Each structure stands twice: as structure tokens, then as C-alpha cells.
Image 1 (cartoon, rainbow, N blue to C red):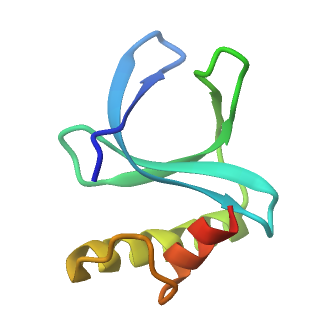
Image 2: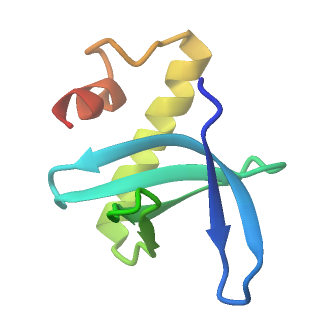
Length: 102
């Protein structure tokens, strides 16, 4: 996996460095998402991603249980792919199918 990072700036101005696991567009919700882990942890989280003109983008908190449930399914697929050596270019799992739909 490429070393992709994301810096989250909290309301208090603290910077949190995160590793991006994957990004996806879910047609059902017509939204883009980024799934990530804080560097040094193994706890995954996600946010709605809104691109901006300067290329940095803005993150929005996910409040819908349906969105969280779908992202959890994709995260499970992501971890299963990594365990099985999936490259993300197949059509045998939900994650690859989701990436193809983008």
C-alpha cells in the first residue's frame, strides 16, 4: 500500500497524523469517504470527504448509522483483502466492486 497520510486539525488546533487506508464513493449515499487510522494505533475511523479547490479538502463527521454500517462492511473487506493478498484490481469482493464503480 502507498504511504498516504492525512493530517486532521482538531477544534483545539492539535494536529493528528493519520494513515489513509482507502477512499471510496458510495453511490447509495452519493458521498465520498476516507477511511483512516491514527498513526501509531490500529483503530480505524472514517469521514465524509469534500474536495476543495486548493486540493486539501474538508472532512465532515458521519452521523448516519446506515453510512457507518456500509463503511464497516468495506473496512472488513479491506482487511480481508490485505490478508489474502488482494491487489484491489479484482471483482471478487465488495471493496473492489466499490472501487470500480467510482
